[in-house]
Amino acid sequence: MKKKFKLEDLDCADCAAKMEEAIKKIDGVSDASVNFIMQKMTVEADDARFDAIMDEVVKVCAKVEPDCRILR
Image (tube, rainbow, N blue to C red):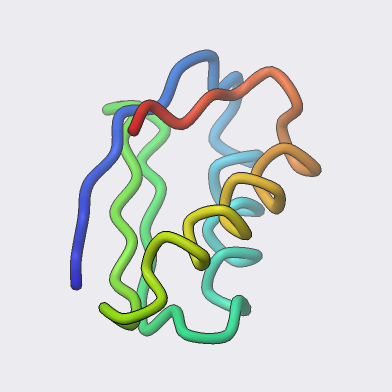
């Protein structure tokens, strides 16, 4: 399953790159991209566990950029 999400308060391109790298390391994620300019994130992950994977994505992103919110 591939889904796009709007991001809020992502402050820099470096943080976006770190978030993308961390998301790709999560078990079950086949691909991810974080676009700083567009303030959007795309996550492609296992359908059966997508919600659990997204919970992990939120945690990982909060470690990199505590102010950033993923609008689901």
